[in-house]
Length: 176
Image (cartoon, rainbow, N blue to C red; front, side, top):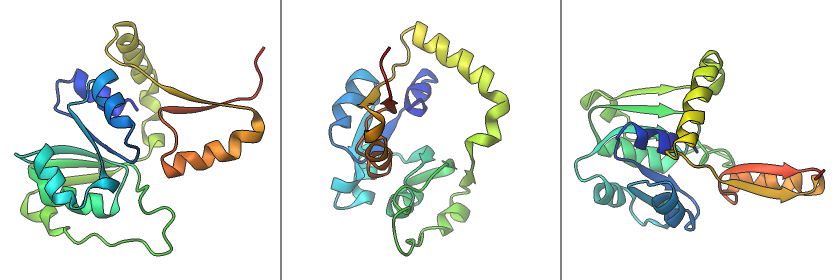
């Protein structure tokens, strides 16, 4: 969960869209996000995005996809940018949802690009140095979701895909 705190350190207005209501207080309180909301609890994603971004969205980091991405496209600003690294809303569907607002890529000159972490392994030392500095300076925080015992690892893994965990999922196999 370094995207939001890193954005804040670059002085960007940042809103996180997520699945678990508990995270609102955590993200706005501890992590200093400007806004946060649970996209599953919003009746109309377009209305929600207009409420949080009345002037539109400049940069969107997408790991949700589906209806959320569709609504974001309609609410992007001219020359906005979208980085796509996942589509969690689509992973367990028998048939993927389609995206209907793709014409906004053209009319608003939006740049959308997918990426995988493996594309940036060569930059990891730089990232590690920057994050360590942010942690030392108190500019970035982390949360770990600890699960005790190897027998609980399968449930912890499933929790990653259902939004059950908060922060970095860690399975403690043994304590020395």
